[in-house]
Length: 635
Ligand code: PRX
Image (cartoon, rainbow, N blue to C red; front, side):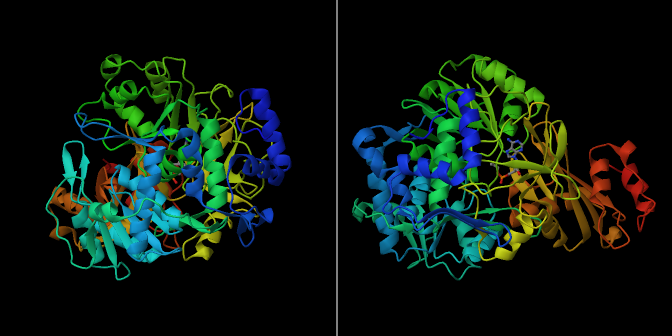
């Protein structure tokens, strides 16, 4: 009997040891005992990080939706699978049982088929947090279409780039979305994007805000009438273990986002197993992850991981501040939430209001609290622990990435003693390593280095869509025979890991992973801009915020700097989305450069974080004189 559910620390230790001594055997037992297969595998694992190529359960046939839905029908048919909580607290919540989910996914899958979608086709899903989003994702998986969910807060340009990169045949969207007291015209954004996309033949539109949208004849269809006509019976496509399940874009160090490709069997097993253990999910628990399904957290821990365990998973359409800062806690009380998983930025924003909004609600149902997306600072950790968890609900600080598919370093609640700001120990099967500048592994404890993973795990991304070379260069070239995460970490005296932050050009703002290059590219498109450099600086709520240093082509033309700042932020908003707007913009005469012309972001980072005492030697710069000018005028 495999150790599917870890209950105490000695057991964690024992299982962990087995999982790394013989990973193939370990994961094979989990796969055998806890999932359903149309055909078993020929080989559990084959891998070569030099290519890189990784295959789990090669030769196996399965469909992930049978594991997430069909197999629960006999025992949990009337159990709530998805609990939808709308933006407006006066609108009723919706309980979708496993029986209903089965029918709705099948109907949607049949609509996809009649609209020409086949196995392997890419479908872009640009839908707000309404049930149709989860159902669309599952419907694609049902027929073997590859879903590419784009967060419905991205701009039309960002959407078009992603549609074109994956050559999507269809876009699924909604007329609009509710966000607090605002509405967003999603269909309008899609229409703008599609001006630049030739691959899209059909657009399915869910009705959410009842706005007047333009429907292009022959291309655009209202979803509901098609669903009403569709059969609720749809055979699940037989997929290979290594068939792509989805593409999900994440920022990189060049302007082009990276379409991370996740495959079927390994992703399913790992997200299911981590969900069960990292949240200690029990049969009648009501689990809530506040993320959007547009991010990996939502894919793995709103949809696939919970449903593979027959769990009840909450989908929340709204924002933490609407109608007031008590909304999260009101939902916890209303649905008797047992596991609550959110991001440090939300915790900090809520903590700012003390406990006024917390004390009104009964939070006694909570058993486990989770954190994800960025390092959680000590103050936020304690507020979460004391005011929300009442010191009785362990906080699982889960470290992982879009690329890793599932949680990699985390405490297991009630098993691993927690430590504020530490993600603690590697999850079962995960072999982390810290490397020094020379690519040598740093052994022992109380050390710091670049965080790598030494051995494949089932849910790792297999490639970047259409660009395997970039996959190799980004993740497997920095260190020999290792997956490089892009993060720095330290290991304390007992072997606990603490993530210290990115060591590359990615900045995490409010838990969103933003590459500096695409933002700089957007800014440089402004006719007044000669050059720009973006760095992060510490921010109370967002964790990090963006600081732009910008040189202008002709300063005299643009004396109204405030207006120019607005134009630049509007441009960023249009090209990427409002999440990438700059908090501070400083116009400078020059940017510090090395003699080879590379902008020295290290110096700008020091200036932005007001740490000019440690700016270091600037004498080797091409233009050292600009540093003083930038310091004098810093914001
Ligand atoms: O820097 C790490 C940070 O978020 C990055 C991954 O971002 P993304 O692919 O958008 O996925 C976020 C959700 C899994 C990581 O490289 N990060 C994520 N979780 C943590 C974290 N940093 C510190 N502590 C965490 N728990």
